[in-house]
Image (cartoon, rainbow, N blue to C red; front, side, top):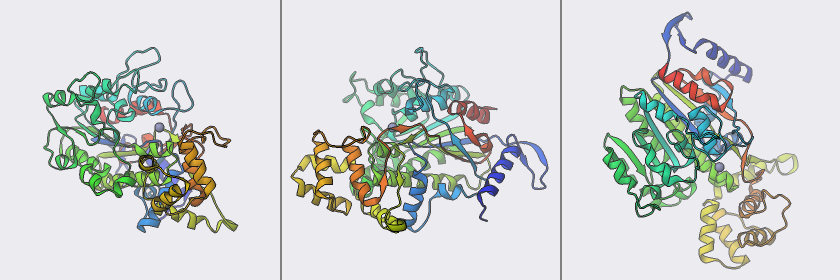
Amino acid sequence: MKLNRRQLLQASLTAGAGSLFFSQSSKGQSEPKPVRPKGIVFMVSDGMSQGVLPLTEAFSQQIRGTGTAWWQLLQEPNAVLGLMDTPSSNSLVTDSAAASTSWSAGKRVPNGQICVDEKGASLESIGETLAKEKVRLGLVTTARVTHATPAGFATNSPNRDDEDFIAPQFINRAEIVLGGGSAHFDPKRRRDKRDIFGEYRKAGYEVLGNRDEFLKAGNGKLLGTFWKGHLPYTIDQKHSKSLQKTVPTLAEMTTVALERFLQGDQPFLLQVEGARIDHAAHANDIGGILHDQLAFDDTVAKVLAMVGDRDDILVVMTSDHGNSNPSLNGVGARYAQTNKHFARIAGLKSSHENLISKWKKNQGGLQKWQAFVMENYGFKPSAEEAEAVLDSIAGKEIVEWSHQLDNPQGLMGQMVGNYTSTGWTGISHTADPTQLTSVGPGASEFAGLVRNDSVREKLLNLLLG
Ligand SMILES: [Zn+2]
């Protein structure tokens, strides 16, 4: 059944009023049956501006002939729709550390701080609270696991960049920790040479370093770090057999974590982060962002399928902030060329990061760069475009009025934008509220405009009562 917008809204509001603490019986009478979820899957597409969802839907339709799970959910009457607000305590524009802290500790803090307030005092993270209550916590991400969003759910650090300090803190707070960032656990790479992998093993964790080990993992606690930094971009993984062999996908990691939690009797919170959507936005990388959002959406589809026949699991999807607000502009007479331009995104075979890193290894002149872009992106940039990007990569001054876009990321985004009709407002986070979509028991808690610092209380009320 397709509903129009008004009907959708009404369905959401009705669900909101009726199912806060009691479910409706089939006869429509309220029964005193609590609908608190046994488990919550809190899914974060980091740095996902609102335009990313419709662009990903169009991209999926184009390259796969089918739509995305999140977009489909927006059309379901049982989905509760909302907006997440995003400020931190010192800025209208948050970073991921303050955003994750607001969700986890229930307090807005200055950017850069993880569960530490403006006076330097530690705040109790939701992971710390849940550990006391014997609620299982899982953290799955495509970033370094010590990065701001997963770190905010279980650790404290006055400085988000001190990831060596964050690394040991998941012990006995998070039962499953999967993502990148092995460097911060590895005695050979840590500044203090401390063997954090060894400390996790001593605390009963199985330590995993690649996809093969991950696929054979036992049933106990898990620490899996599958890359020394962030996991590679999905667009690069798609074009590399060796990356596919060694690095599990977000959907694979999430499936393993959720299967374990669903099989057990204890309540749980599983945070899932698609982290590289944010990084691709910082890089003004349209191919990078759409492929990573598709990978996130594959994970949404998997989670919804896994919990589909149960009525005790809440799934919440949102983002911590916008980033650079990518959009598709109409092009040509009556915008008739727009779709043709958009279709060129499918021809991009590399992230900007990977492309520039490969270029720096070989280098060459203007024509070589034009041919290199043609080979990897499917279009040949004009001499002016090619020169501007190369000058910017070389650190030379270029004529560019926007200080946000006066850099290699901004120039690459504009060069690709000239052929795909996509544009970016800058290379940094934005103040916009983000999409919030929830389904399952307690979803109505996340209707309408939700303050980021109210999420902790909602999650705890639902899980602990
Ligand atoms: Zn960011």
